[in-house]
Length: 138
Image (cartoon, rainbow, N blue to C red; front, side, top):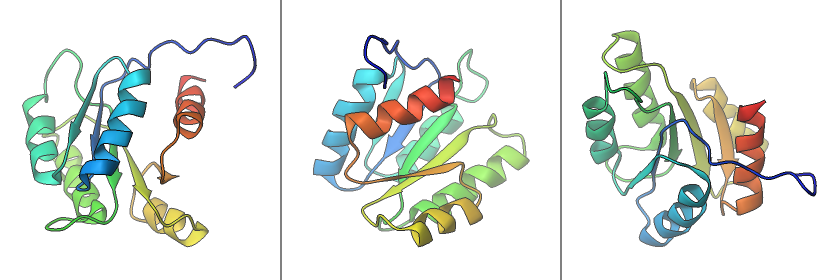
C-alpha cells in the first residue's frame, strides 16, 4: 500500500472459516479490522448454514475465505457445495478464497482449478489481506 493512502472498511460481506481456534482468532483480528461485515466460523457446516440464511438479504455474503484442510468437510468440498448452491440459485454469486499454510504454486493452482476465485497463504497477515482488499476495490 502506498504511503498516505487510507483504507476504508471493505464493504462486501465476508465469511471466514477455519477449524483451528488459534488461526480463527488471528483471521478474526485481521479480517474484522478491515471489513465492515465479517463473520467467522470454526466449521464449514455452520458457515454454510449462515450463508443460506443470508440468501435474499439486502447484503448477502459476497466473499468466503476458507481454510483448505478441515475435518468433516475440507475447503474443496465446501467450495464445491457453495458452487452447486450458486448454480441452483439457492445463494447469490460469491467469491471463494482458499487459504492454507502450504505456500506453494501447486496449492494455489489446485484452488483455482477447483473453481475458487483466489488463494491466500497462512499465516494471514494485515499486509496480505490489505493487498487483497485493494485489488478487489480497483
